[in-house]
Length: 415
Image (cartoon, rainbow, N blue to C red; front, side, top):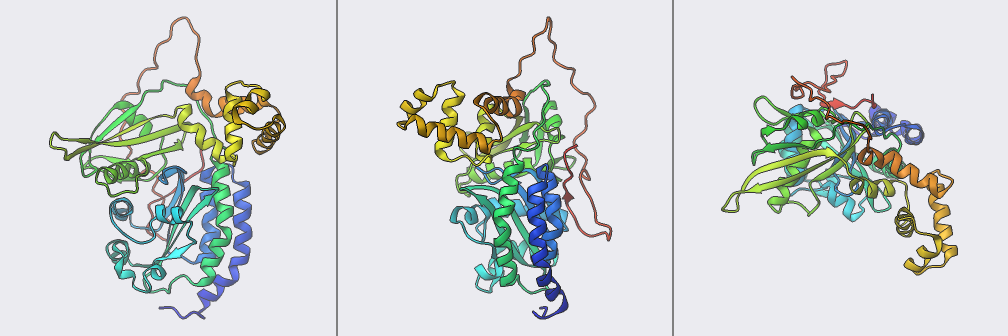
């Protein structure tokens, strides 16, 4: 244990006020989710004083890893068991529970009343790797979870104190708003041959086979690859969806869908869904992942939520997208035309548009066009499939620190 008045602790307390300002600056200025998580690393380290970190954007509907994350100074072999614990085991401070209950930032030591050994995560993952105190939180706003964080200290250090928890709770709304804003700030896309990819895994999550399209889409994902077979790896986002699918099949999860939506490295919206196959006797026989370009119906609910529209504003927007006039919208929603205009005005302000036409163009051109674009030509042929494409090598995305420390990956900005 480190005395509460030791120099590292004192320096940590002094740095928190400045760190809060840097968090606010990063959350306002970041041009993408990748820039956001990268920019948050330093102020979080300064304020919390940690030895390992998982900081990730999440799909607000499923709480699975989304576009970008920093997973820092943790053993590579911890990744798959960490996901297994999150979805398949009973434990304390699960992210889904923290979001569902609206709980403040919490440590494993406090929630177990000073007995962290009661946590399988602590005993099987953290303690064998030299870690002890854990601080967890979700970054939620308006009922949607846009990110999550897990912060670890070495086992010889003291638990996170009241000041650390209070500081994190102070900046949580800023970080949540930053994740929310970046969801719609960096979309780029191309209309190329869009064929869904399929990955087949065995019940233990080992890859059995995959289509050539799946190889292409896996190469567009961000996360550090996790070994899923003797010669095969899967990006973390895909592995997490597969783990959630298995958990749902075993009734070990809270009912959230095994699905995530994210920006690939190319800037395209991608959707990863998972499901399990059953043998004739009803036992689990395998897991199937489908990776494909997102459809407008996949993306639009998240995009609309990311702009912070109220429930009524979303209803009005849905009517506008059908081309209905103000009077018709008022009749259908049982509100006055004046109220409809107020909702439209508020929606335009939140989306930084100035007219209904610009609003529709922004939504469907910027976010949905890649899924709906039609190319008119005399003779269209599908682009030739790339040959000789290899599965992502195990070291892809690996970025050891200068001191040779342990690290899974640090995300980079979109190319």
